[in-house]
Image 1: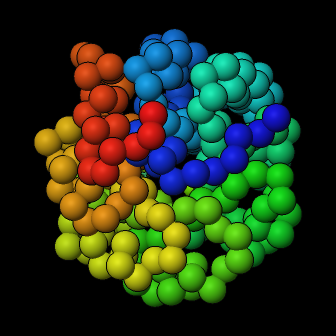
Image 2: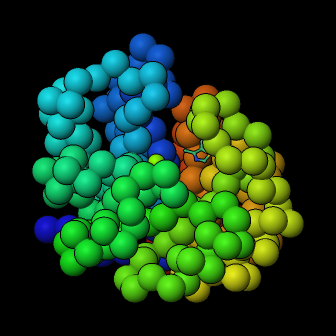
Image 3: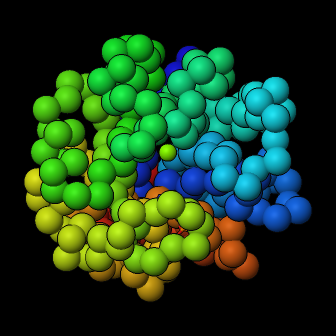
Length: 219
Ligand code: TZP
Ligand code: MG
């Protein structure tokens, strides 16, 4: 059974692939993140990943099962075929990835769809789409986790994107615990992070800070 989208899932959105964690096990990292209370997990295995497609499929199956056991949506970055093979709950696509209209048409009835938008014109185009669940906007601050990241959006820029968008926005890129209140102030539904969590010495404390930022959720 797939997990349906709701906005509270954007509160503590963890993005991670093997390229982000050195020699650690991704299953162990995701297990810890789930135990700490993340509200969504995105399997983004790309860039410096050393996995073959069949290894990615096998690992993805195990990660999907871990998420399902915690009732947390499992979202695949970018790869429609992988998302379908894994019966993912959601797929996230960037502006440079597959055509969003095509993605919505192909998988929109079986999983929820998120799209990256970092400019007002991208938001305006996204507002024309039918069935988009959420938008990911960033990088809000400089990031070392994405080589081809767009120019920094900043907090003022984020607030403008949130104002313009017709679906909830999750902020991403260079977010630290200290910035969570300012992110929430923009009206963003939550934060999506790589480094803040994988470099944290205390996952529970970090995830709690994400969940407590902004309006209270119902968890
Ligand atoms: N998209 C925009 S910035 C980014 C992605 C995937 C990387 C976010 O990683 P970090 O470590 O939280 O800055
Ligand atoms: Mg992408």
